[in-house]
Image (cartoon, rainbow, N blue to C red; front, side, top):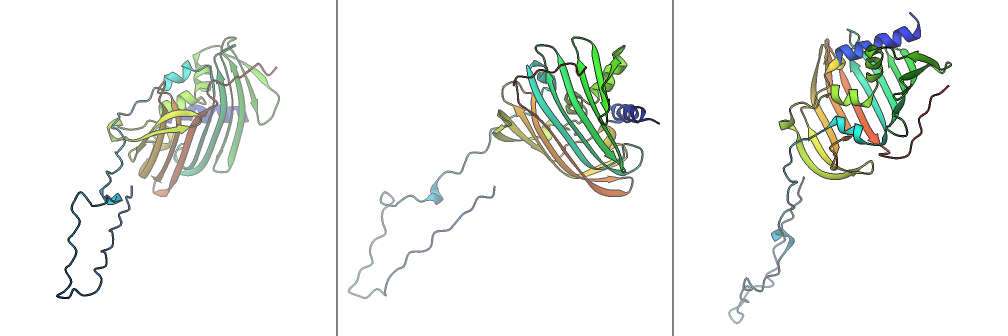
Length: 272
């Protein structure tokens, strides 16, 4: 089986089988001085109006506003350009048996001056490594592929099946296939600046890594953090860490995706 066949087989497998401690200090009691004699009269306690307010009486920080989880993956299409990355490592049953795998994707996407995307893909599964680079110029309907540093080869985009293979590498696909779980279980943390984008930060202990990674696996102790753009609701970043049991083998899975360099100038062109 040549490298391209192995890559396409792996990709098709993916498409078929692929988610305050508040410190309180009690003030010390004031010293009462020496014993009170008959001649001495204890000083009257200060009236409430004379008391000096302390931090103990300060109101606590208000909790973050309640906000339902909202995420629009398709809103990425409204950006003029962006870069993205995906990293997965840990125990998986994607190939039908429990094995350690590492997957990395780095890419860029633009909607002007032409609609185009380029990405690099690398994976290591059970010691078998695969690398690939892809350039897709949507306006031209053409795709180029280079495997492991070989020469670029143009691949005719003859039907939707070729596009579905390319989509299996895309950021849109991975954000959609790795679902978040029940939105009602997602906690709102607050607003934060992430990758230069003002974002809503959400957290869940019920996140899911379904698709290929969930086949024959169960997940526990999930920590799932998601950042969504305030303006546009497009995904900005996700980090998920979980314990996993796949076919009686225990391990962990670590997963991260992020979108960056929003609307920065790009010029993706045909490689040949």
